[in-house]
Image 1: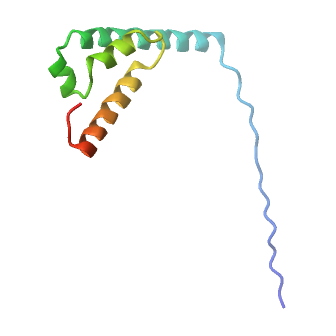
Image 2: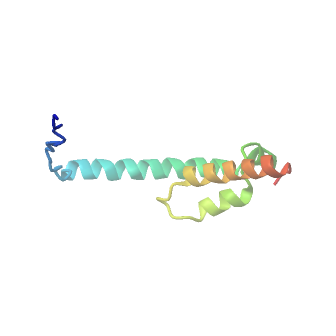
Image 3: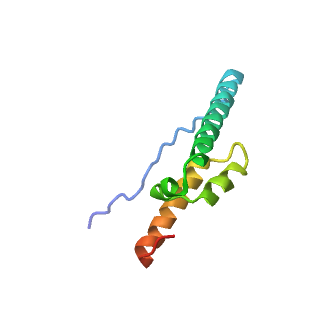
Length: 98
């Protein structure tokens, strides 16, 4: 009877990531600020649309107002995308316009 060697050897090279440099941190913060600023500009443009145009995108004026009053660095695009998808899902499920 022959024995099968069932031993596994796993060689894991654990590399420690270096902390980002000050320059990288500043660049990331500037990018986050620029993205938040751009999102706010788009939200302000959304608030200029009429209710029918917003509804075509699956949004309501209350969605836009809620995002406008949220934190500056909150992800407004993600919130509006989720709101529009949920409204579309409800519409398809119930067969009604919200």
